[in-house]
Amino acid sequence: MIPALALMAGVVLGLVFEPTVPAGLQPYLPIAVVAALDAVFGAIRAHLEGIFDDRVFVVSFVSNVLVAALVVFLGDQLGVGGQLSTGVVVVLGIRIFSNAAAIRRRVFRA
Amino acid sequence: MSLLVDMMTNTLDEAYEERARLRGTPPAPNPLQPSARRGRAVLPVVVLVLLGVVTGTAVAQVRERQEESTGLRADLAAEVRERTAASDQLEARTQALRQDVAQVQVLALGADTTGRRLAEGLTSLGLATGTTPVTGPGLVVTLDNAAADETGSTDSLRPGTAPSSSVQDRDLQGVVNGLWAAGAEAIAINGQRLTALTAIRSAGDAILVDLRPLSPPYVIQAVGSPKDLEVDFMDGPTGRGLTFLTSEYGIVVEVRRAEDLSLPGAAAPQLSAASPASGPAAAATPAPRPSRSGS
Image (cartoon, rainbow over all chains, first blue to last red; front, top):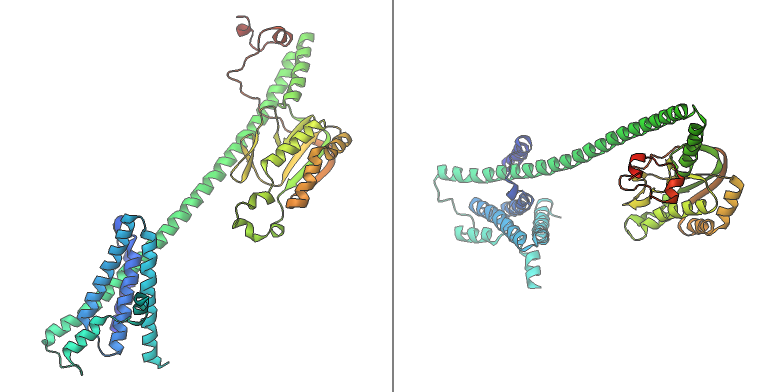
């Protein structure tokens, strides 16, 4: 409950204050969001399986975001930024969906 | 292959299980101090707030960019409309001034016989060059793009086929040439009088006549003997070409006679480099600039 509220509060804060992001970082925001979502879904699943660990969550969150941004940055330098962004989104999307499926199985037993 | 399978099956971070194994199952009582534990529990919340802020910022930015682009387009469209209106006003003013000039000319030249002869010469020259507005019977040829449902909606996806269903600049050129050949004495397209210097060409999807973009339907008015014009035009190669355009591409063509057409005059061409050649031809026509022709 509290994590969900925290997420909502963050979204509202971001929408209301619209912090200015350096132009160089702007392409990485969506990728960072997707990577972070992957970490969040993994954490929810781990929580339902009773093996949640806040340290693992924070570390995986930060490293997910950094690695995704790094991969896309490298892609930009090599001229395949668009394709690598797609790759990152596809891989993380698959993980998000399978984690969501696992969560669904645990919650609804279906 | 194993990489893909691994990606599909092991979706949970292995670190969770490792930490759980380290702690031992069932979860052992947390060895940390209560206060430190509380501090650790706050950390995920902070991270989640951070995620929310980043998400909100990204969303806000995408929206802002969209607004910027639509605003820019609206601004450009407004400017185009404004400029077009201003240009139309100037055009109307030019027409009025040209009429004034013609009236004053007739008044000034009407005093004696040489003046009257000059005025007649001016009028016939104006008729020939297309700078004088004319009225008279004639033929009206209307070309319009094929109806959208006839050509199919796939045209936009296949750029190669799209232009064929719309009127092309060379269609208009052909019609105009055919009308001249059939004996037309004055021609205007959508109210743009054609002169010897008028170009009919396309820029992108638009057809330009005398550098002014026209939009369909294209109405070509030709002054001349309606009967002769129609017979000669429709029997000539252009008429057959129009039939082909209709049957093959669905271009809407309408040809009708008109008893009373009134065509505007074109702007007099501004000749900056050309001057009358000296010789018998120059001597036969009144020289516009005696001071120069004498040299």
